[in-house]
Image 1 (cartoon, helix red, strand yellow):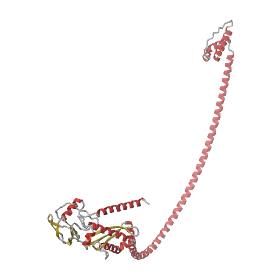
Image 2: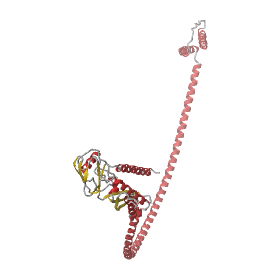
Image 3: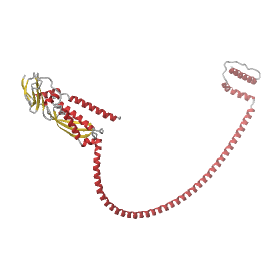
Image 4: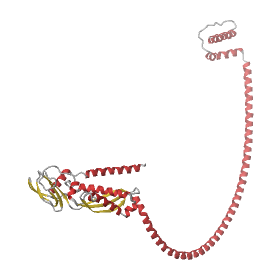
Length: 438
């Protein structure tokens, strides 16, 4: 079930609970506090209403224009007189008497507060406003509005069976009870009827409501009922609760009226269209002739235009072909010249490369000859020059040789100074190599 449906159900349930609470409150009679007050009965009713905290009259479906009866009470202590208006019923009871001492319409009497009690009820006709939220046979909501009018027929029976003890409005509780019975009767009747029947014929509802209320109020012959008499029952209005359903119900009638209006318009339009067709035929013939002339002129103009365009296209094609041929010849000549130029560049590069290689060869030959001369000079050096060169290179040789871990002294001597020197140097070198190996 959708969320919208649950929401509607909860709203309806809350409405029913509120109506139930309101009904329970309405069925409770508002009674005056048990305090002696010598003020008249009407004034007592108003004071009691102010003390209880209620309004003078509950407007949620009670009697129209009802109020407490203005009863005048005069006298002192146990010697009082009660003057009842002529349009009010009164019942006067006394301690020790099974039957009322006084009972009737507009009866005034002596009153002893210590032993007596009395009840005054208006005899005027009462009107109950009814607003019944009903569900018809199609499970659609319908609001039925009506009213019921009643009066007291047998007050001797009525005061025994009904509650007239409300100090503000003695008829309020009775009106609430009859209103609830009327709403129940209307709901039961509408539940068996369709929406069309409820909206078009309200007599079944009135008949059923009247029968039920009279059976309760007036009895069925063997029972006197409640001592009341139903004067009239009327249904004022029946309204479909859903605007969408109400619109759907109105659619057939609107469609029928729209159809009749449309048929009348079509009849009128047929005559107009016949005349318009004749005029259109004449205008069409003239228009066709005009269009034929226009089409001929347009065709001739289009043919001339086409011829001009084709001639222009041929001329442009020839011009483009000639231009293309010239461009091809120019490109061919350009490529040939570029090929000759490239060939000349390659030849020049080859010549330069040959000259460069020849120069390199000559330089190499010169270097080889120079190296040979150097070697020859080196080979021709004397022993003295060799010794001098060795002495010059000794510091560099000593720097590159590893440092010894220990110093060994070698004495070099002899007659042959050069041989001894070389032998000494060789010994030093061997000594240093041996130290390095260790």
